[in-house]
Length: 302
Ligand code: SF4
Ligand code: SF4
Image (cartoon, rainbow, N blue to C red; front, side, top):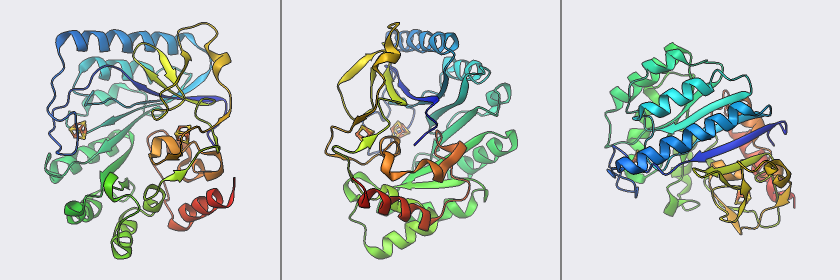
């Protein structure tokens, strides 16, 4: 479980446009209207003011529906947030299609990127060059891919070309989660020693989860949910008594199968695998046996 003094926040505003066209994504090549972008910007800036006014430590992961770093107001907001002492980490999920120079103005002790590689949408050499720029700037990052069967070769080539210190995580493709053949699993584990953590659903109903206590998911209007996967609001962060809504509670969903959710399952004890990189999903020394030990602990508990 995360450090209970830190509130982990997933934030997602109305922006949903993206400059890429991944076949498996509903946001592919969607364009936001000017009104949507204005509303998204206002929501983001309100959230920034809320963070700045609070004393409690926060770890923020922006999880936009689409691609946000192509918008200057995200780059500027992240830069400012990275200089706030109460911000442990400010990270964002991105396709890394934009330039990286703006990160030089961030506090690199706090800023981080969760970058995803989309074969077919970008050239691998260009993507790897961007990652090398991050490394040169000293910006913490992880790189992720989705294990479509047609992408296995591209995933292995990417691993070979990335800097050794860059952690490459592999997500199971949704319809294949738990269905890969043993030889496929071995291939994917050779790329990501923690792959098996993602290649399953966790029977989470009734199990202790820090989401709703030390972790929340926040929409643009400030409405908070315990996580992205349970739709019942728990309050609004802009209400003065919001913190009183944060309490431990068992999960009310049958299963949890997404990293940004199950990582908060108490019995899984996953945060030890990621340490300081938990917000941006960076593992400094990923080990298959440690991942399997977490799975066994969860299955043996409860
Ligand atoms: S880069 Fe991400 S948001 Fe954009 S189309 Fe691909 S999966 Fe969707
Ligand atoms: S286990 Fe997953 S679905 Fe359940 S509360 Fe935690 S994050 Fe949400």
